[in-house]
Length: 135
Image 1 (cartoon, rainbow, N blue to C red):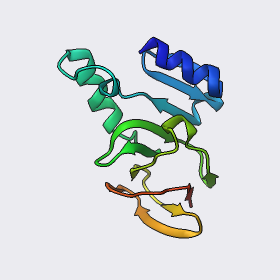
Image 2: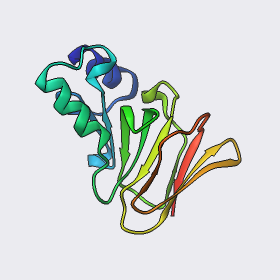
Image 3: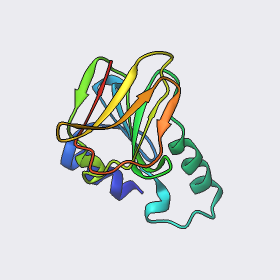
């Protein structure tokens, strides 16, 4: 896992804030790496990390590299904002969750809205997402 964290920091900057976590902008954006991408999920540490990565903290909105709110996760605190770089997820966004108490997150493929995610909701299977925007 440390090698994966080091690779992210080398490629995109940021600071390591957990054994599988990289943070930018003093917590405005947090990447949580899913250990099951490269490690069996049978160890307690991997199982715990998998549960944590599936959650999207209250007040934040999240995108995931796999459907069903799984895989690597980017978590965002700032709104309104538009994010167009998912390189830390290898360009893949497959699910979106909005854990804010109000507002909407829009997921786009180019200029087409692929998902409209209201507060407290998620879109568990999306594809070709090129940007997200919140309001």
